[in-house]
Image (tube, helix red, strand yellow):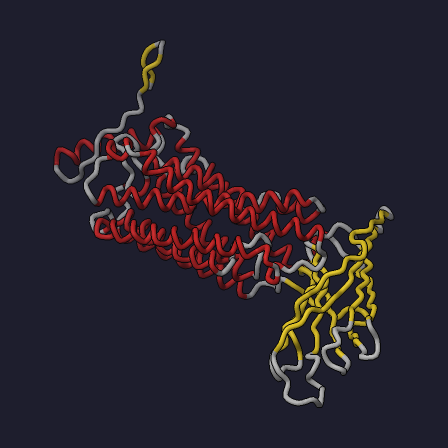
Length: 474
């Protein structure tokens, strides 16, 4: 984690940052994260649910099929997405044929969907009659089987929808089968809530990047990029990917029906995650090199062997995340009742994610164990950064296995906790590795020399001189 440069003097190395400042930074990080969790816990529900018109349906035993139709009106882009869900009664629950067992069966449905945009009278046939089998699982002695998806619309492109569903009677039992059909759509309050917090994080990120005098890029611009340390180059990359991870295009996405913006967000999310995973492998391997007494020059000579395997692993994780999303989008275009939890298309991505993350966990665990004893020799500021990094790594690994990085935004508490953690973490790194501007550095040169001669602190003079063709400039 240390800044490996005798020329670049960063904020975390300031002698004035003592134990009290580290405690204050820790409290700020912890309180900020807890506030995000608390606000998320009290935020609006992501979905609103209401019964569809003529929402109770019965499949009669003396019929081969039953037709159900409904109209969904007054939808706006702020709703973002909606589902038509069906909760099916256990076919044998009211039967007198004996004990009710647990079993599964396929419910055949034929779905057709038309849409109209009232503003310009635009009409479209979204799905011609489409027939598929949906797996229904019924537990023993339960009145209701699992809820199935009849229709999922990931983007609201029209104001009115006309849906027709034809259910074939499965003929499993001689009795009737009842259904409750409901509409579930994204709450507009949640859309506004998520957009507000997204732009709050985005605004702070911009300040951390460009605030006069103390912003990372504002201060770093005064230093030739050739003199930037590896840590500063990494922080610059993380800030850029964090900017897009905070979704600057969300307002346009909420006001339009352009699916390209939703794709862009998934690309930025996957890129940020892959970048931060790669950063951790590299930065902790840096600490391991230091803990074994390797010089920075020796590390530089081993860059291909040292860096490329890490890059390939994180790129593979990025490919899996993007592949899962693109596969889901392709299926949604051809299957109106697409449910990723009940399709084998998703299994390769789940398995690949698990395999790559297990490799990543073992690798990062090895690096952490190898360098942990070196942490004790770090100055307090770098120890603080190390432990904040450790906490963020643990939460990220848990989040990947809990599918917290699914492209659709989740419940408010999950949204704010993940967004808040990453923003707080990258902001902390940016503030820690921000170089002092030229005036601040030169004002410290005299004190540095004085402290070196007195034996109190070993800091070399900092000189930002460069030679050009016309002579020497400072």
